[in-house]
Length: 571
Image (cartoon, rainbow, N blue to C red; front, side, top):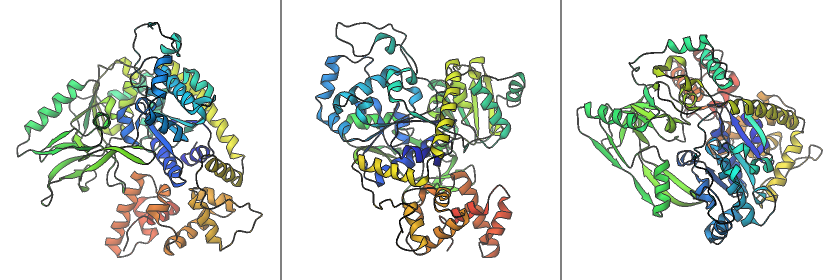
């Protein structure tokens, strides 16, 4: 299933499980959905199973949002206390959509407790009290941490049965079964660029790693890391030791950047735990660093590597030369905790961390150009897979060591994954049979059900839509349909719709970075296109598409170049 297909399904208001391999665009898709919801004034609760994952989507932990905190079980008294807190009651009642990211790390008992709280506070005896729930994650990645201690009855009435408390994965929870989420399994790949490496990762997911696969990894065995590579370890002690030692080796003065904060201490602490940048960031010229946040115009993304080459004379911010040769001034950015559009707390820091080494856990969600890893102490299913799948190509990987557990994923997940794939294919076929006009109607009905605003009311094909053909395309684009979907809906070619988009942009009826950001090409491809346009312009003084395509090669279509050109400043 493509990102656009999944997004279309989410907009109809169904409960869904959004999954896919690393690099398939789960976070990108969910951020597009959040933007769509906010654009229609629909209140959405954005949460994640961990603090680190929550910062990636500017949300809070599901434990904090629901009020359950660190509880391992929920008693009647606990539920009463939570339901008496006005702040928790207000945000749960006001929300219409609940997003839970990195659901693979959420224990079944926790999901069931959250569902119980939502149903109690919202007063509706339906799953999660009638919220649309979007579960996001990949169960092949790091699993939930479940205490091996047996269930102990403290004499109170537990609302969660002992067998549920000891279960491991969220999909085994009664709350998941009651929700009956539609599975959207993303099939696109936006991280790995190496076909051979992709086949190996697929074999690892399927539990079919062979001798030839092991031999392939052996070709990357070395104790010495590549220049510019980040080292990945399974334990924090190794990471801190290497980063501290490497920084001390550099001559020159240290430059320190102190994190600032606003908001209640408890919420600030939550943001700090999830932020990959430290409270005190100490740098020197020559320090190897990693960006820890996505920059809106794609100058860098979470995981972009580089080296400190100096400090800006005007404000002393670090100047980073990325592995692609681009120079970027790393200015402070914000991590915030929001609730229904209101910022409850924020922290501000230069979005960097020392990157000679990083833990596998903190690397989850990142895309690395080069990594040197020691997987000889891996102890958990999925830990090796998470580490290996961070790297874009086999050439970018070097291995200091590896044990057999690093090549294992949980056998229960392998079985469940086949089920998820089949369910996704069925959903894809089911929704593909629904006419685009009917899907729009379902989306508008969902918006109205949530009390949101539909700025442009739906009109059937049989009704005459006033204005020119460009106005019709304009209307559909404002509903965040892909260009391909608009073409299908209107019975026109993709090229014709591109003509319309270019015309609307020229007439200032659409603004690319505001109205069309969801159509922007994938960041790595967009960056290659941008550089090609600049090169051709410098050489010829013009930006002819034919010359740009010659520079890039046949893997880039003219249509993709035209779409990217909308976002480029070519004046």
